Length: 123
Image (cartoon, rainbow, N blue to C red):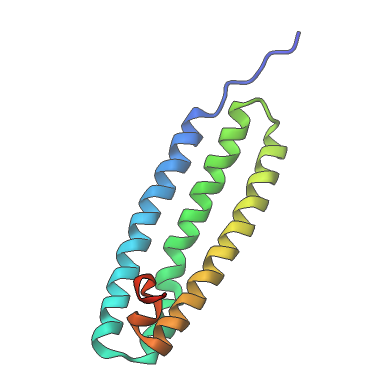
């Protein structure tokens, strides 16, 4: 007789908690670095925004969300290997798209200042 394994509720909550706390750290770091840039207007600060200080919390977000997605799929009965395979692919793809968009936004901010990303001024 086949017995279903216990769903990974602990990993579901741990992944969600890791993603949220890393997201809060990412937000605080990004706000602090953009505020420093707005005072100094240095191109070095923008380059520093894409450094390890910002990449580490972003990596924490990605890992937390990957664990959350995989555990969520396992709750619905998917095998562990398939769940983590799908979650890793989704997380990598989404993480790369978000990091690319953030990089483009920071370059736009550097070139035109905060007015260049103000959506209310368009139109």
